[in-house]
Image 1 (cartoon, one colour):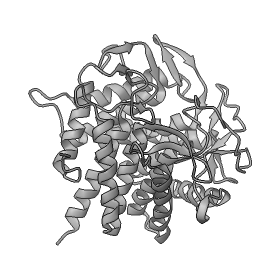
Image 2 (image 1 turned 180 degrees about the horizontal axis):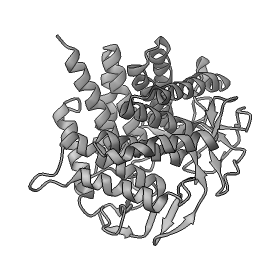
Image 3 (image 1 turned 60 degrees about the vertical axis):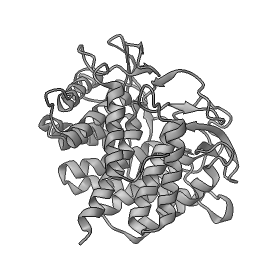
Image 4 (image 1 turned 120 degrees about the vertical axis):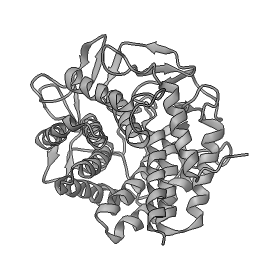
Length: 408
């Protein structure tokens, strides 16, 4: 029998269970966090550090510190771990001249210096989460990282960020929505941490330009306008970028099920601070087709992606797609009062509980084949960090607690 997935106690316990998989072996006393774990918790690569992974673990422990407080007699000192992660970001990933962050470090040496707006978005998110947890030294990094994004990637003409530049800040012609989506997430967090409305205004611009203007260029079935991933330099659709390349996990082809629902979630979070009627309407429009086209009626779960006709393209199941979708369902349920969204939330959770949650060792599996078998025994690598899974639980808890405080 499934637990009550809507119960705050369940969500808190689930966060604790994921943290327990990593505690305390994740902390590298020499700096930063180990990032590559097998299903049983064995570290299979002790030297690799990715920028996004370092940021996500820092975020995780800042959020844990906020939720669970400081160290007790036997509890991990999550606040100290968040400070430890932030120090590694500043001392190892950040370039000495302050003009960017190292994308990948191996055995303490920089091996990839490409600049990604996606990476800077997570640097901004990590600093914002750290400040919210009470780490005062994180505050200057928020303004510094935002300035970097604005200086090197922002286009006033396009109202969006570019995506990638080389080590000398020569910007590539590729444009994509994913970097802008995570920038929106990070900017909302920066506003929540500092109260500075410039961050919120920029987040709102990104949300409107991606979920309305850019989405209007893509024609899906039955009048749908899903968010497409890839664009040319002028922000016209690029329908062929990465077509057929299943190995491109950072920039996959097709309509990404999880990005439709993740944007639905972000629109509702944005609406808490900057209400607009179109936020809820557009969140509904993004969520419903994603569930309709993305749900695997044979094996359960949400697939990775589909084409503009709504046909399945990549039937693999990714942990983050389930997590972001259940969070979006909960926010829609809370905002609308409609039972169908809670039913969808329960359905996604039930599938994830059965197939993705590792009830023996802890945390979630990273990826499943269409039939829900595991392709390998690597639980965490290439940026996973369980930021999506714990983040989803934190967000649902936040919404439930906010709704409870509004009741008479």
